[in-house]
Image (cartoon, rainbow, N blue to C red; front, side):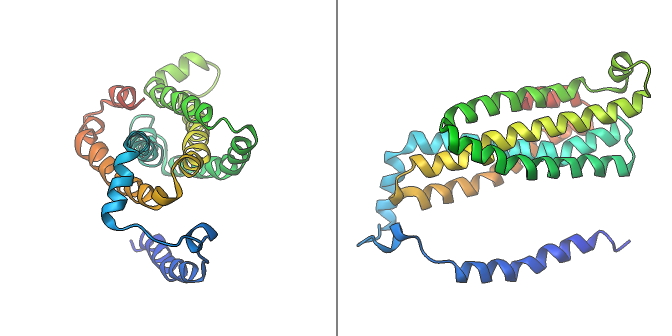
Amino acid sequence: DWGWRIPFFIGCSIIPVVFYIRRSLQETEAYLTRKSHPTFRQMLATISLNWPLVVTGAMLIVLTTVAFYLITVYTPTFGKSVLKLSTEESLLVTLCIGLSNFIWLPVMGALSDRVGKRKLFICGGYLLWGLSTAAFGLVTVENAAKLFPAASAAAAAAVMIVVLDCVMTFFGSTANDAAFNAWITDTVPNAARGKAESVLAILPLISMLVIFGLFDGMTQRGEWQKFFAIFG
């Protein structure tokens, strides 16, 4: 009954480490060499001058956070409630998601740096990310039985959701984590970079309100195909 509390205690124990790392970090050369630092009004003016970039980044951040909760929260729930996966199989789905993200982040980040076409990685990654998200609505035990008649339908559906989750995580890592964050650093002026990052950091809260407040009812009613189609 108390085992679920252990991850929360481990997470809280990281907080002092974060403060220690922050205290030991050196300021960047660009920040130290600046002769003056902008006032709050100047910050707002800089953001307003770069509003197309800020709005584009804001929309992508909202999309990314919604997709994050789809991957980590809703697809394991979908597997357990619709495909009747066991608890162990649902945990395997989550493990594969994390492993896929861990592998592809540095690989696609390095490739993005080498190729340099960040917009291609972002647009292509987000497009394919959306298509793979919508495809989740097609994963059912009945469809698995039709595709793999010689195998167990439940086992085939479990394999399908694991593979599709890893594919979706790959495209997400490519579009957002590997390319989008680097694109923000590349395109936002030094004077506005901190402010832009601060604005973008607030947006995941809006994403949580969108997905949990407006669309969670669909999953409660079993409208999974419509749910994945909307977000795809």
